[in-house]
Length: 203
Image (cartoon, rainbow, N blue to C red; front, side, top):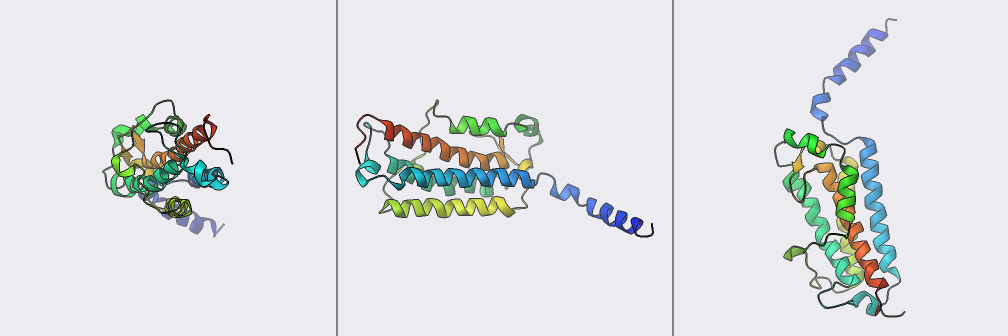
């Protein structure tokens, strides 16, 4: 019995730090986000892997993006969306008024962002402009940016659950991470629309 009290005191002392970690990600949340980010990255790689240059560059109509355009957009936006977390979400003060608004909405955020039902115009800085010379370079840029995102999710002590953004919808920091994966899923669907279009070049 003489060892029980010291162990209890140690546990109690550690418990005093709980408020400092309020809002930090659980291991389950980290695992879910990293799995989603890894999976959508692999789907991008698999989707473009066997496409010919003509297929990558094909536009289904005026003003429509090609598969290569979608890939470049993903490479451009990955760093921009990640910066939203580090430069906007975590630098904003906690917003208790949004806690109930965003609570339990992880799946809803993912579904809404991934859906192609509502079209959106990309900000000019994220519009494809042939920034990289080759598809391989574009894919490498996307993968490098995604690696940074995943590394952050894996180890960050940031209290992502207690900091928020209000646009494009109220989200906590963790939901912005999920939004990054859902944004990839959205443009994967766009790539597949191009590939399924009537005039898509044959191999």
